[in-house]
Length: 436
Ligand code: BGC
Image 1 (tube, rainbow, N blue to C red):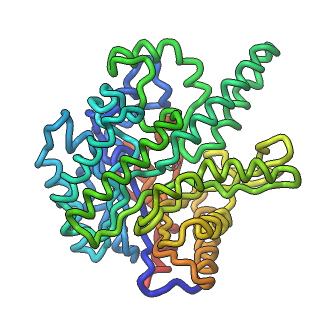
Image 2: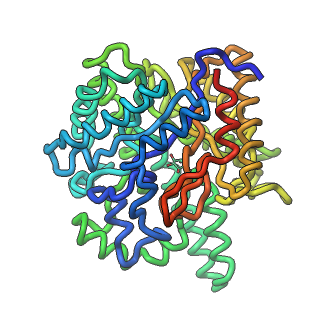
């Protein structure tokens, strides 16, 4: 397998999923609600906030060359306009630790979690968020930019529309089920709806909790339906994310014109069986193409893929009979990454970075196989001249998979939930073996 000399092989994490005690953010607040849809609260997470040196050491020892992680807005600006220097100093130490180990830090400014105050002000549907995000991005890069080359503004900026489509579908199914008074298959339907979003959500629980959760949310955020980043978005909210990205990009470029700036998108490998072509076309336009005007001039695009989605004449289909499923109930389909890279390259001619690709499984030999096949796909893309600059496996360690809590094992490193002890898996060594 051929990967070029400067190709970045790395692993990714996100602040809220690994750091622990991220108490000023919206997710933390929602995890504590009496009618929370989270299986469990994030709590101490992986205590990465205190153990980042050990974690970066593990990454370096395995030969990985890059670490993608996020800085937490709710720590850095816990109250509107009050920026916390001590938190920036923390992230500077994380970057310094990477550099001391020869690891390239790839920084994400925003990975799903917002300060509670931002959500109180209307969150990701409010016009003011564009300026708030610009100001935050500018502060972070002014302080950290000298040590960085690559910055992702917003992680999976297309998540809100995907969730809007799923909750609509789910609502329709629930209504149909209610009519049929068939309680039993409801859970199955919930499962198949969840399988269509590339992130850990519990739709069944959300529906059940909706009434009480609305009251509890109102107490915290001043509105029963707070617009957190992963809430289903309106078309305006969807584009607000794009404008926040553009504003942040301009602020970063004003400080460091050579900084590589881009955002990341959650991209399914959409495949049509005969009769399913129009579904693929519509969904690809929604998931990818309609964002292109907002990405013009970006230095790179972060590609995040976990599986494929099949469509037939009636719409979305379940995974084929007998297909191997991951813990997330996704089809085991590492070839999806190559397909998505090729499709993205047709619309976006700049550099691509695989900012996330991975599998939740208790069987690490399946992870090794997944990585091997995914990287073979990447190397075929490179051979065809597609400018893929790096591959970041999701995730460096088993961590907090959002509403699904700690039930998913995406990691290259296992974390003992009692002792926080780290145990590298074979897949970590395997991924490192591709680094040069
Ligand atoms: C997100 C991660 C998440 C991963 C696995 C991506 O959508 O960026 O935060 O843990 O998928 O579901």
